[in-house]
Image (cartoon, rainbow, N blue to C red; front, side, top):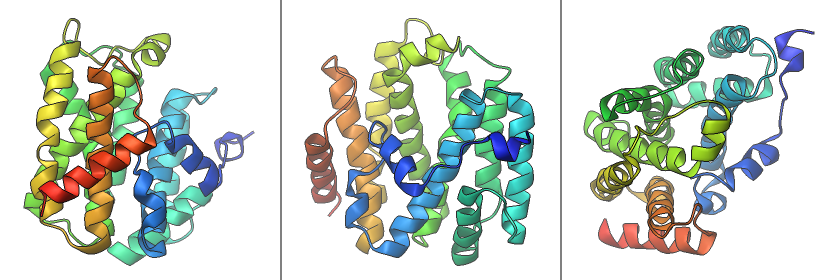
Length: 252
C-alpha cells in the first residue's frame, strides 16, 4: 500500500474535533467563512505533518518525503491529499510562500533524530521550525504578515508550543521524547507567560476578524498557562473565552 493510501484522510470536522484538546481558537466558529476555511487549512496541514511524524506506523521519513512531494503538487494545483488540496486554495488566495510549510515538515524530520532537548536554546530553535511558521501562516491568512507582526507572532507561537509540551509531558515520554529541559518546568512556564505578552501589541495592531482570530490564539495560550500554573492540564472553553476578551480589552 502506498503512503498516500495508508495515510488517514480526515474530514475538516474530524480535524477540528482534535483541536478541542489543543490550543486552537474556540472563537473559530464566530469568524467569517473565508477566514475560518483558511485557518482550517493551516491547522489541517500542521496536524497532518505531526501525525505522520508522531503516529504513522510505517517509515515516517518516507511518509514525510511523500508529504513534501504532495506539498510541491499543492503549489502546482494537483495535490493528492484532501488537506493539501486545501493548501492549494490557501496559497492561491494569500500568495504565501512554501517556506513556512517546509519548516513544519523539517520540525518533524528533526523529531525522527532528536529526542531530547537539554537546554532552552535548543528548544527555542526547535520552536522556530515547529511553531513559529504557523503564526506566519495565520498572519498571511489575514493579509497582515509584516516583519514587526511576525516578530510578535514568533513570541506567541513559541509560547504556545512550550505550553503544549508542558501539557503533553507524559505523551511525549511515551514516545521517548523529552522537550522540556530537565529541571526547567517552572522556568519554561514562566517563559511562556512572558512571551505571551507580545500578543497584546500584536492584537492591537490588527483590525476586524483577524484581530479576533489572533486574540483567540493569545487568549487560549493565556488560559492554558493559567491552568498549568494551577496544576491542571487543559483550560475550559469558558476560561479561553474570558482570556480572549481580556486580550481584546488590553489591546485597544
